[in-house]
Image (cartoon, rainbow, N blue to C red; front, side, top):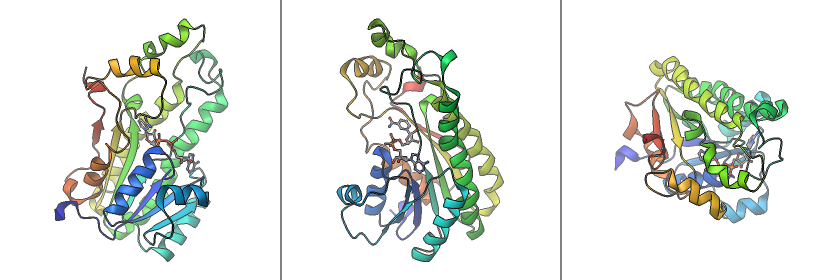
Length: 268
Ligand SMILES: NC(=O)c1ccc[n+]([C@@H]2O[C@H](COP(=O)([O-])OP(=O)(O)OC[C@H]3O[C@@H](n4cnc5c(N)ncnc54)[C@H](O)[C@@H]3O)[C@@H](O)[C@H]2O)c1
């Protein structure tokens, strides 16, 4: 069991207030790690709902990951309160949910330039900045693990046939482009950093995830689940094991790699 031991390690989780991020945080707290959440949502009531009150192993900092200065300030606070960071989970991201405005979910030719910039700014540049500041600090200490959370849509294109049911209802609906492009950018940023820091004891890997249940409508679920060999979306706690694996010595010889958990989506 020592292989999976991360007790006392300081792990930074961006977007830790979101659906998957809060699952990772709860699970890593059970593993007795010290967790720092960087998020733009730090509402105290929500924090208590998700994580309970007065958890001495949890530090929540309001930090917009598109600002290098905000990340640098967060690092100062992390070192003061918890000490040297060991892990970084680049999890915060923007997607265009199916109920976004019609331009975002319309034809590719009309996808708004501002939406492209916004998604790239958080999902791609944010990870670059965090890698510079927090990753750079981990590299100085000579040991650590960075996990970049990507998506099946960063590996393959969204299958637009999932949304036929919306087009049949006269909506000009397409899963938009920016999220896919941003998630692909992480694949090679990961390989770049894995080789750059390999001799410094810092491992950097991609965790590529498939879709997760989150009150999606019935027609969407029917179409989507048909495309998954396992026949269903993931439950939100089904990625925790992979997170622990990548953070711990259980994956000590793994760097610059992709670990895909997608129910077989990309296998056919
Ligand atoms: N949920 C899925 O089905 C799914 C599937 C594949 C991959 N993923 C990936 O998993 C990760 C988590 O997804 P999720 O569904 O939990 O997302 P979510 O929307 O529930 O959470 C994202 C979190 O990121 C935070 N955030 C957004 N912009 C930020 C910024 N500028 N600075 C700091 N924090 C910011 C949000 O406040 C939120 O707490 C993402 O990288 C996503 O691409 C999710």
